[in-house]
Length: 508
Ligand code: AHR
Image 1: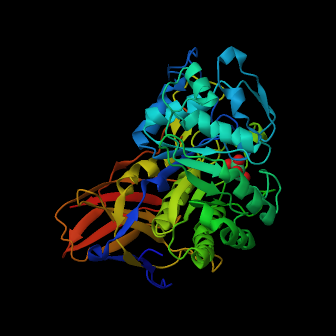
Image 2: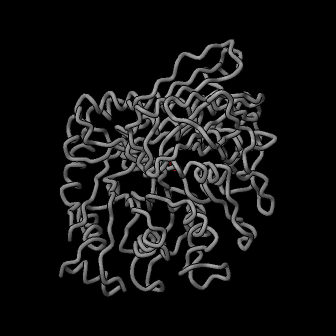
């Protein structure tokens, strides 16, 4: 665990204290914690990222312009594709070559939707290049052959004279792309093949054997984790093939009842704390996974990749249930900020996290209008948390202690009022993000900056009157604003946060 301690919170104290230790800062926050996930699911790809070159909707080479620009602004470090469950039914050869010759497919995992394969390997990897992010390809172990996987890797990354590289050249791409991450299976216990762990461990050995590194491309291989609390899966896999992987995948969604997930927008304080409690429980899951990984890999060579995480509610009324389209409120923003705060504390093991998903699916960054596709896209509160947290990417974590009360839930949940991350960027500037988790009350947080002396403090706040508020098409009511609630008194920083809000400060 990174050097961070959360002190026992006292029930009586109204306000919080954060004591930072800038002189002990040594844990690095990899930017890949801010990864994205794009699946062929609902309108994530078609109508979200991709509208096609001939669309009346403004686009850059077929990528929806407003979505592209919003992602560019976010400085996305890594994007995972094509699934998820979709990956284990995806046959990459159908998504290359002239558009008119590409066969269609039925997306049987997600609503039985017909897709035309116009977004394939070239379109995804070119997008990564345009965005300046690393590509994370999820291979098909569930229904694909070893040969198909091996050929895909060769097609994408070989600069040699083999037939696959030749085919890529024929399809218009002379030089290979860089593909940094490759998932050898996704949720192989479920949609990825309904396997038992011993069987998957053997399959992993076999498929992985043919994921070659061509032409200087060095691929990090990620094995499928079990269902989030299946620790036997983690134990067996680490024991049997831990020496053959770079990453072990963990999926964590803030859901406990899959038949009644609840509405994304219609909820009360109790529902809010219920979801927050579930999402904060990722920390225990991470600790448990790390304990198993430490047993077989004490040198921490294998990374824990939280390559799917986020909220998962019932779809919006009237939407295709298989498309997983949900709105995104200030509750999602608090889930995002507090989850990132947790990931930051375990970066000795967590090397990547990919929020699910980037556009129009689950806890999305961006929404586009199904009924009026020409409407400008909407940036969600989760998007803005990512934007406000950008200074923590590739920064050094400043450890600290938090002393605070628990939110009032009648003893039902054990949720602190406050969460935070402090880091120092490469220029030596400290950034401090604080979330007030309390649904009802403002809180003042006293921050002891240790050896750092504060001269100026400036920052932004993401807040809204109601925790249920969200940004809708033509009605963006939540966006970062200049924060005026921080002051310096006797060398101490005092930050007053309204209920359910997130602040990022630059402390100089
Ligand atoms: O993100 C939606 C789905 O959740 C993914 O396809 C799958 O991997 C997970 O179960």
